Image (cartoon, rainbow, N blue to C red; front, side, top):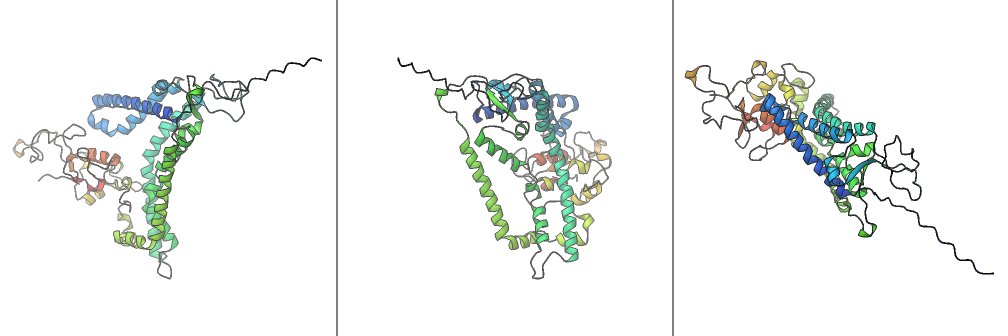
Length: 429
């Protein structure tokens, strides 16, 4: 009996798609391109706002302009189903993350519009649906904007409650144990009050998300992870070209940085709990008097000298927008008493260098400021209104420099450190 020829072996199953998921370098490059074009659009909108309403209004609404530019850019690209300019530049397309269901042998990624990944039976990624794209834009633009707007008020309200609780503990004598050591509740409240700004900062969550992205190469932002949006190449990748580069080393360095910072912070709190607690009270000697004798006149500033956001009540537009006091906002009279500067009624500028003198015999307002260029604010490019000087000596409008130092605690001209509580209002002789 003749031997039968061996049966041919079946071809190995195709386990890789001709359009694989994008690597971390390409995703970061696409986001950088998008950030550039979003910045260009924001500048165009800001220039249009400046032409229509003036430089002062454009400066006051700078944050809203950037949020509008980001939302408009994503609505013109992602929302209507098109690719962004950064995605086109890097040959990427945004898809839904694949479902856990394994794909059949030899199947490629399904890049067709469908309601769910199970519709085609492959379990592969699909083009994101309209609700998913809209949700991504909502969580990446609108929610962060609202969070940044409401966070200072939430911190102020929480800080006020912590101050009130500490005042009650001190008044009742429960701030120390019978051995003369600070009580646990007192130490916890002081810790929360001192590190409130850092504890409520979203930078920690962003660092964790970025570290995970460096290791996995997927979900560059938290909003993409929430909605399960990933990137695939629109070109074929040669399997013989070698592996694609990743940023795992950056992930390791970022994790090491977070661990070292956490360890140093814990070490500082454990080893220096007693000395640091006493030093914190020595740095704030009026704490007990403010808490017991004059709780209503308590100035709402952070005990942490690096908590810049919480020390801006003096220059906050919410505090100067009206005369009433709501929540922890101070009235105009209280602000004037704190700064020893009379606050005019109607929120009008007391010293407006852009207006001609009402009485020509008295000369210009603050005539000791010589030269037309020196009488202009370099931020709003208009005449100075209620001039205020930074510690380095540069002069700006009170509202302009207040808005600036809330974003960047530095002088706009020389980049030296300038905290909100260091801005000095100038007076006419």
